[in-house]
Image (cartoon, rainbow, N blue to C red; front, side):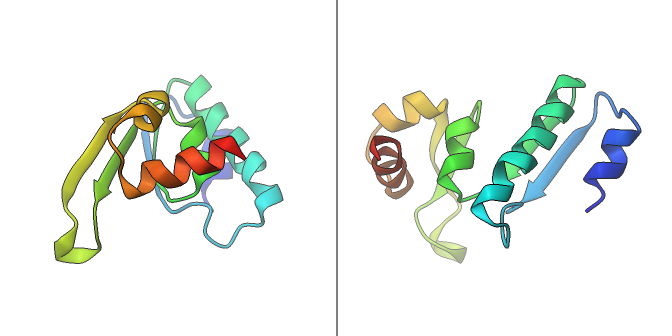
Length: 104
């Protein structure tokens, strides 16, 4: 992963897009990854994650829920807003799972 290299270079004002960055990670490694993302954000970068991990969603500033299904069945924005608003919004499949995750 080239993320470490970018952190060493003190990259600023860049946009980083990660597609499912938690795939294959052990749950205990996710906080380490989140610290890397926080460091990028502190350096005035934008971090965009395409992610299904509920613990990552809870840390987001903004959620865009696209669905409701895969491929051609998807493509529709179901929700766009803060995680708090998402939990209180109309019921989407993702918001139902996030509500249950937070209650646990």
